[in-house]
Image (cartoon, rainbow, N blue to C red):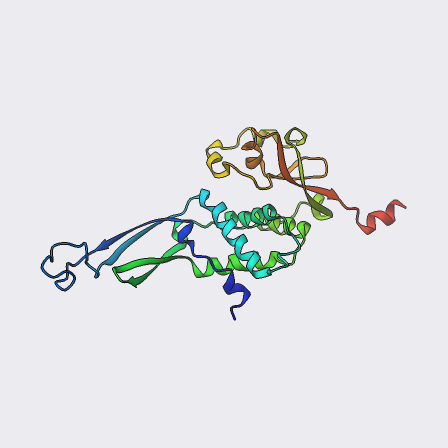
Length: 245
């Protein structure tokens, strides 16, 4: 029986773009009487493979991993059962891992008509790290997931959200406050294609609807009236409760 880690393995062939070049030696036994034609040559050897992975591919990868997440958890997907939130978390993990075209290699195998691309594999060490992060989220609730993702991206948590809980909420885009307007107006809009047709949670907000994370996604949602967000709710810790009494 396959273990949970094995079940999450993806074939990236359906996600990345790739091209291969095959050389045909023109073997005499392939098509008797017509050795100059490669139509029936079954001795082709792949001489080169070019793999292209763009930021736009990440959401497809996140959806694919989310599919495997459901297989792993069977009837009990996880404590977080909102599909969009799950894909959002995996998307953030992928974007923070620095995966690029050089992170992949082709799995070349023999077919009836010569060598063929049977799969595109992610670098072994990178895939292990990816699996580690995704598996870590399986037993977390929304708040724990959000904090895990923020710490992964920035290396630490802001003190003001240490004691916060988070929930998913669909709100009017007009309710959102942009705390750092100078940064907001300097955002590189060339990333627009990365977040085109984005239907996942747009940004992480504090309890006052100020953006904590997600300036780029917020900018690219300018044509939407309502958006899905992850909103903080400040939770007073026990020490503060005692001192205020």
